Length: 139
Length: 287
Image (cartoon, rainbow over all chains, first blue to last red; front, side, top):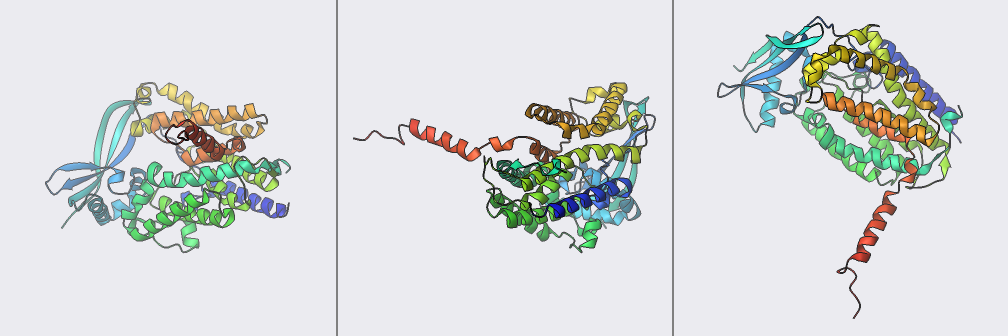
């Protein structure tokens, strides 16, 4: 077969880049980044954190906004958490996306809160505390 | 070396083409609708990855995302018929690559499609292939073997990532506990009270991932069915516990199966033919 050497060369290259990505790469090396889903270790003695996005409707009601309501998944909100905390005005884009996906419904405010679920010796107790991380209010 | 070029039946390539390309409309509209939902998100939240920066890919605006989506779906459905396999195959690979850039550039990268991308990249390297075709080719073998290798690398290297980011004591952490707190189901929530069971599960997972290269040693059909069943079982369990399922990866896993024995066109024809024979309306008695 012609091209055997080409095929082997390319395959070898892909394998080397993939190994290098696993050793030294970061997520943005996709598709050659490390396969790091669930790769970090969570201490059995520290609380489990989970962020959520909440909004205040024009009627003043507080609602929890899930990923499909804006187009930004929870993991993506968490991935860009630093940006939202530094620049809460960015949350206006969430209100815009919500409006686009809910035939014009306007949110008066958008918040990111984090819930810390308590663990005792690695088992969830069912209790959590909540903290506000970023807030944008429509002016 | 000979392993990598083991001649494989072209029928398996035809089947993989149909499967991998028909997966695309399902992926877009059913399995991962969040990718197309990025159309509604401001480009200010787009954080280009290395590939996006190197190739100067545009920030995905609303109309850009929808254009890529429809062109990709139409091209993929045509490609699934096996027509113009090289040109359409390259087109699908490039369009799906861009689709992945749209998917992964908003703060979260998934790892469920490395092997599927390898399969998409290699399908155009083989010429025409018909369903059920028994004739073998080394090019087909290379594509099938490389996809199998990519499947194994996905498991093996995710253990490596656990050691790198989590440390050697990853298995004694509260990883599954945390995962279930965040996205547990009625099948897994009860486990929250048994952290030690979850810890055993974490050891088992690392053991499975580190021993995954053994998958490539499966030589007989029976052994291959067993390893496919083990992998499928692993992913179904994860789905039951956390509603996470590596569907594109499962498509790639079918490269381990003797798909050349599946002949959908013949099957449909025989079915339709039989139905026609039996039907009194369609076969009226001549008068």
